[in-house]
Length: 311
Image 1: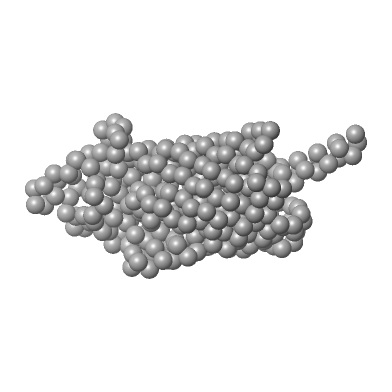
Image 2: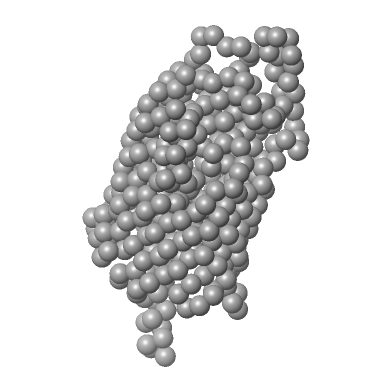
């Protein structure tokens, strides 16, 4: 099943990063809060809380910026038989910091480079080097068309936890705004279609992953009386479903998602990435809701255009 899961993710999706300049047609996200629930992934319930902040500063040539994100995962295990005490894996955290630089290669093509560290652990014995995970990406973004009908192609490579333990993987994504109502995206980092109902409401059909790879800093005693000082919890799944965005105010959006996790992968691994235990998993519904604080680029463009005309 793991091979099927990895192939599915590689073909259609990748982790959702902070907003990437040049890939969001209408808005740039500054802050967000989200709560998610997977009630029954086989024998496990998963709760997730996320808080993110980001900003970008225009330079003489290009844009520089950074983002910070905190995730709290609560895994409620209901396994009847376990080879060791799994309670240490129930409450996991992730604190990530990333910096990016967007460099214009031409009027329609940009180069973006980003990198940053993350601490992913239960933090039961403080912070250690085993909690640290580095990630980064280098992508080119090519755009066509004006504001009303435009398209963007993003391609490059990244290093991160897309498939559990950090590794290198490709990024390729094509997104197109067909008209004022419809837009779609294919590939990485997201596949889906969006319909804008009116000024305040839009709905999307999306396919995206949900993944986590964190360190357990507590000792684990196995059945063979072996004691491991470092173990990892790996979670990887694919989400399919609907997203509704309601613009409460010009810069505040309520985001609600609901759908199905068709399959998932939840494992405990040792420091050499060998599987120690694989939890029973099955398909499960999911739901999430949150707030997004953003800048509407369309409004800013119109304001700047009006000021230019007045001058």
